[in-house]
Length: 219
Ligand code: DX5
Ligand code: ZN
Image 1 (cartoon, rainbow, N blue to C red):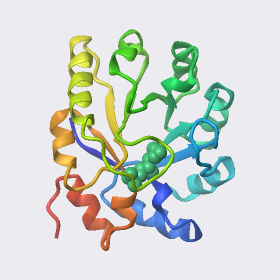
Image 2: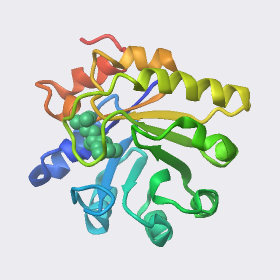
Image 3: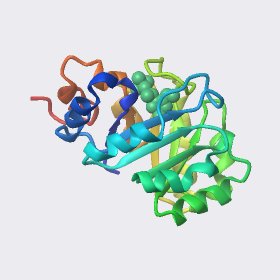
């Protein structure tokens, strides 16, 4: 599957958000990854609706919204109205995941489920046909700039085989600690969306960093 790169704006300069959004617009990146944190599901608070509304006014690529919040069902329609293309909820935050995924699709978005590092992929066995994306957290959610958890390679392969056995071709997204050194291995393991915060925005040349992670020739 074609490899998509989704820079996370969590690592952008919030005082120069429009500049960083335009950087992504003009780059070879494919999606915007937006991390919403509530200080309850994860220990950090990031940004919410007014900021996403402002981002949506400038972004020219799909918005991939990653909700790290408890009880995400409360806000499904809100994020649809804000222009989210993909809405990802955490399996650990959903009591009725099947219903939540159906509600996300019914609101016109792609339905995503994120798994914390400790959550086995087998938890998704009975909802594989209800989802469009699985986000494997390769760090514990809450902060950018953390070290990639190596176990993610094995998990990616296991999830891709589980999907293949069920005849499902959903996206597998990897989130946390992604860089040019692990991107190709993750793609080979079956991932097709890579989130990259620090390795995009802290790079000396973000355009080159994006191309390198996508396995494209760097000019
Ligand atoms: C972490 C977020 C990630 C984060 C990734 O909780 O879900 O999307 O921005 O940041 P890096 O790429 O710096 O690990
Ligand atoms: Zn994320």
